[in-house]
Every structure is written in C-alpha cells, then in structure tokens.
Amino acid sequence: MSTKVAVVTGSNKGIGLAIVRALCKQFDGDVYITARDVGRGEAAVKTLNSEGLKPKFHQLDINNLNSIKTAAAFFKGKYGGVDILINNAGTAFKASDPTPFGVQAEVILTTNFFGTRDMSTHFLPMIRAGGRVVNISSMLSVTGLKQCSPELQQRFRSEDITEDELVGLMRRFLDDAKKGEHKQHGWPDMAYSVSKIGVTVLSMIHARRLSKERPNDGILVNACCPGWVRTDLAAPGAPKSPDEGAITPVYLALLPPGAKEPQGKYLSDKEVQPW
Ligand code: NDP
Image (cartoon, rainbow, N blue to C red):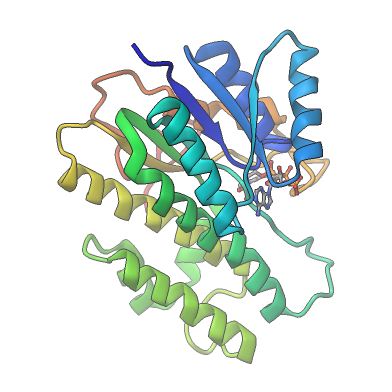
C-alpha cells in the first residue's frame, strides 16, 4: 500500500507547527511542514527533530500560484495524492496597526481567502478517497456573519451559494473596503472576520461538491476555529497553547475511516457550531 501523506500549510510556527507535531505522533504516514520561507521551514523541522519527531518539508507559499502548483506536482508525483490537507496559513493585523483599512483588507483576504482557495483549487482534485480537508477559520467568522446585512447573511448561509458567487462577494467586499464604503454596503468593519467567513463558506461549498461529485470517496471537508491561541498572530495572554489549539484541527484530520460526518460544518472544541 502506498505511503499516506499529510500536508499542513503555514506550519513553520504557531498552530500549524503544533498540528504537525500532533500528526507526527498520531498519523500513520508522512507529515509535511510547509512554509513560504525555506529557512524558517527547515528550522521548524529541526525543532521537531529535537523532540524525536520526523516531519518532512516542502516549500509552499499560498500567495504564489507557482509555489502551489510546484508543491501539488511534488505530492502527486511522490505519493499519487494527498490524504490530509490542513489549510492553516493565515494572517492578521494587530488592532493598533495604523495601515489603512482597505490595504489591510487586501493583504488579509489575499492570504486567508484567496490563497486558501487557490490551495483548494490545486489540491482538492488529488485528495485521495477517505481524505480529510481541514480549513482553519475562526470564531470571528461567526461574529462577522452576525454583523452582515440580512441579505449577505442569507447568501452566506444558503445551500446553493456557488464558489463563483462567494469569490464575487469577497471581491465586492474588497472593492467596498478600498472605497471606505463597506459598512454602508452591509459588511462588518473587520476584514479578518470577512476573510474567515469566506473560509467557512468555502469549506461548506467544497464539502457539498465533493459529496456530489465523488459520493463513494468519503472525503470530509470542514472548517474549524482552533480557539484563542498564544501565537504571533494573536496575543501572549490568549488562553490556549498552540498544542491545545491543534486539538480540533487534528480531530477533524483524523476522523476515522468510514466516518460520514461532520461534513461541511464549522466546529470549535470538537463540536459542530451553528452557522
Ligand atoms: P502564526 O502567525 O503563528 O502563524 C501563521 C503561519 O502562517 C506562519 O507559519 C506563517 O508563515 C504562515 N503564512 C502566512 N502567510 C503565508 C503564505 N502566504 N504562505 C504560506 N504560509 C503563510 O498564527 P497562528 O498559528 O495563530 O495562525 C494559524 C491559523 O489559525 C491562521 O489561519 C489564523 O487565522 C487561525 N486562527 C488563529 C487564532 C489564534 O488565536 N491564534 C484564532 C483563530 C484562528 P511566516 O512565518 O512565513 O509568516
């Protein structure tokens, strides 16, 4: 039987690194740290080596289509596909950052939504039967959803929203944000939340699509919040350690063979949450 493989984006530090640590201990297969910066990725491999773990490494910048395609070709060539994909790479600005809202929105959505979508476009077709895809969203996607206009909420909760429509909505938010008109057009005043609404809804769309197009393959796609975790992205006073933040993503990645659910859900603390 071919070797199984797990790929975690943005895993040179923070929650991604903790996810790789847990998978190295619990997953029967190769586990890849991926990072946009080779030096930071190789340093992370050494960190886990010093703990007696043996992750592998591949460069992967989710904002660079060539990097995504090169990595996808590598995994296809070496393993024939991917068994676990965890789209963890993400970014945010500190509340005190003076960068204008429209610029922040562009940077945040480029990575959190459009980068994650590009990863999915190139990796989902090669997720093997029984595969698991976990997209790291945030509780702020739920907060942001509640602050959207009723019309936007209806679309984000609908079962018939397509990926093209979602992409169009994310682009519309960016246009509105750059003009400073996002609030009057029914968007929350939080670009990070909007990017994670995109991640949650994208996960639901992909789960529906895979269930329809590959009904016998049993691939499960879900979004989750890791909790509020002490990383460079969040705050030193956050309640969870990175290893604790990895618990729900790893739970979803290791849902047992034959599991039918959760599918296309948003979870936190290993529980499906209302959307
Ligand atoms: P960190 O800042 O510690 O880690 C973010 C990781 O993403 C880093 O490895 C970073 O790489 C990587 N990254 C950023 N941009 C790219 C890119 N273009 N390509 C590849 N990798 C990239 O943050 P966290 O560990 O806290 O965040 C992990 C995920 O969890 C994110 O999606 C975040 O939104 C989410 N999250 C975090 C919460 C928290 O409380 N910490 C709460 C809810 C969600 P580099 O070192 O090169 O910058």
